Length: 295
Image (cartoon, rainbow, N blue to C red):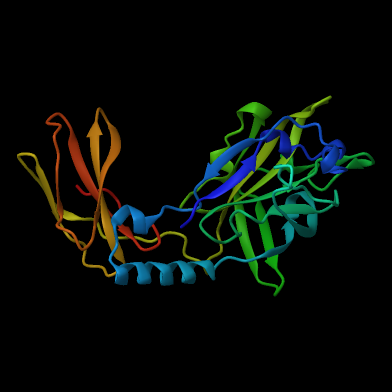
């Protein structure tokens, strides 16, 4: 899939009154351009044949039907039940924020909730008049539930996996917005001490989809008969039409590095050169699911 250019800076995640009343009057420093990949470009990685590319696109279309356009969020443990606005990137390169301090904003150019990747929802912690929608976000703990509802009343249930508090300059943009094979929803607000530049910290709640109707992981068979003869590594194909290729990893001192991607229609072998290393192979399906390592 194509990469998107997201213009993000952690200064944009401060949802206090001074940052959202007027984007044009914002005194935020210049934003940093980040290039975040939505998902692995499997057709490029594995040099797929035309028929395989067609199957890949059909699988991606089927995958997209599992996602929803969110209109409402419910977080029972902190009594949040509010509407969701769609926000994007402003003309000045900044991420949009919710107009209403009692609603939240979903970053629409990113991932839809329910699809693979990191969907992001942000809300104000306070406003000129007092506490706002995410004032108690820092009270969430592992195991708490977050429900997303679409315009048709369909619901997706997410569960908190962890919470983190970051200094503005050190928050991990890729972890919050970047590609992942999980179906995540990340909630953001500002925290810490308020000063001339706004709040100096960002609070992030990481959640993962637990809706039983959507299977988030796929168990692929592991490549077998992996053999190293001299400098030639060979293996047997996985008998599964969904498998589009294989990844070969080199292991040195316990650290694994991917060294080759082999399409399913190619010969199941690669030349390796490091006599001190060990190697394993994994299978990849059309949706980017990866099998366990070969033995």
